[in-house]
Length: 96
Image 1 (cartoon, rainbow, N blue to C red):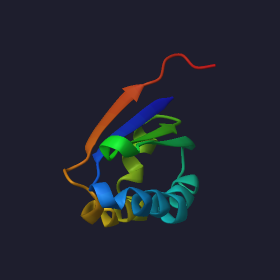
Image 2: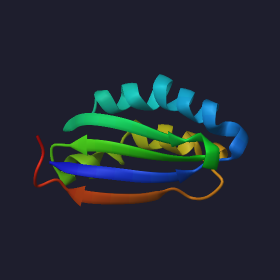
Image 3: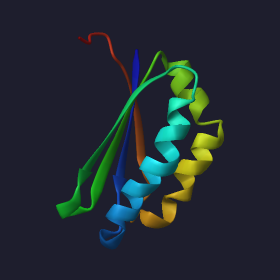
């Protein structure tokens, strides 16, 4: 299993629009990706920050998702960001 984490700084007045973009476009697109397992969106409204946490069967599946329409959907959110997103990946050796 592999986890992909994206840390996002949002413009303060764009938090709700960002959440809606994820609900309406990005999550449905994620669900159709090969190797997709699960997704969580964490919001810190007070500080206009978000963390996208996605689980994949393996690293290759996570990286392949960046080559699809999903990556373009995520880029559509860039005007809502106050800084460039930070992407990280981790092996998940233990889960229950």
